[in-house]
Image 1 (cartoon, helix red, strand yellow):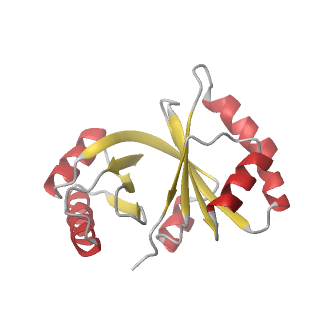
Image 2 (tube, rainbow, N blue to C red):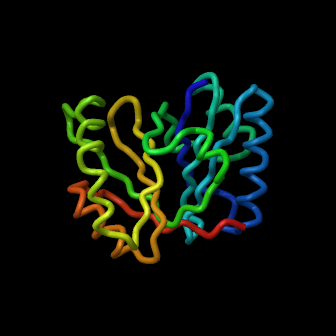
Length: 176
């Protein structure tokens, strides 16, 4: 079953408990369609949600978001790079930062994956940062990279070392 990114700006008043209830409703709605909520990352200021859903179709994700009262700003099929789905399911979180990179026109998935494979070993030069995984939009519009790190400066240093651009960085709230 394909994976999808669901990005949302919570309309639930910015309260962690309300956001968690919305995510619980989303998980229930996705499961009702034989899907799974793989992970949900909430910005530390509660302004954004990055949710990865396993579902049959994009429309199924949009319907589940609607059932959870989550406004879907973005729903796209994604490819998981850097970890297996089983590893992600086992961890269900433990992310400090999400880095977004909007791809330049003309970049292909093959070229991106070759570049990533060539540059990823350089993360060893920045031991204070642990690269976890990337979700690459299948339409090659952008990717979201997930990191464990103490500071945003460390994440930016790691991105510089591997030669990867940054369009946005979001600090993720600790898991409840």
